[in-house]
Length: 138
Image (cartoon, rainbow, N blue to C red; front, side, top):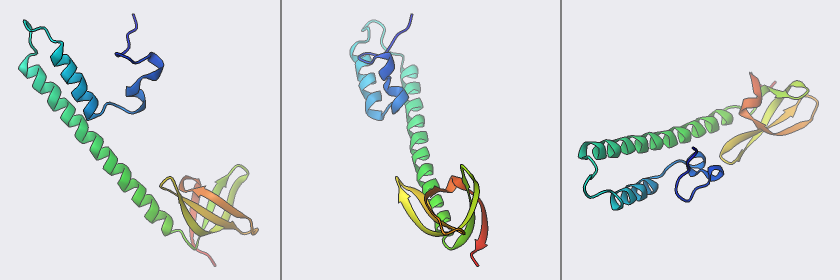
């Protein structure tokens, strides 16, 4: 028998889209304490284990956010170092060599503008599309 959370349909599962927050956890905990059987209260050890587990998960979530910020900063620094360098860009038609002329940021991600040897200007080139960095343009 399939079950879903209170007020949540199977297709709108909040945990799949954004995870449980500290406020969600406290709301669940207070509901659990409100409706517990007074003759069978929550075991103190189990209660403390749940609190410790949530604390650990919250610290892991915060570490992941900081790591994501660090990776974004590293990508920005790496892309700035590419200005004026010749790169090979992966395209649908094969690799195209060109010089990185400018960098813009879209949703926090660096996007390169590359001027190909043929004079074509390729915009919004992601770092993942750069196959090779050759050095300074000649």
